[in-house]
Length: 139
Image (cartoon, rainbow, N blue to C red):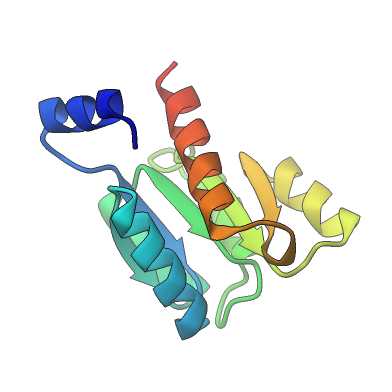
């Protein structure tokens, strides 16, 4: 975070909220720690169903969404987010182990701002992508 970002955050008086929808506790902890250190407020959900409920209840600034989730897949969650008038504009970045081109195309076609493959990107790069997405949202 550069000094301008810190000044902006202090002016607004609140941190941007990221909802991390991930069922793996180790991965959740890694991303929660990195995002918190980067200055974000982080909420978590461990299933697609819980994630969708939290999105509807709390309208996060951005959702970091896994695809392979219990009870409701990330793609099903994405369809419901985009189909709901109150949540259709919430930015979603898919972060998944599924790197096949058909999965990437489907995620983007359903309205994800980006589709990141866990094995091909570092946590720091994910934070950079989140910042870019949030910056573009304000433009």
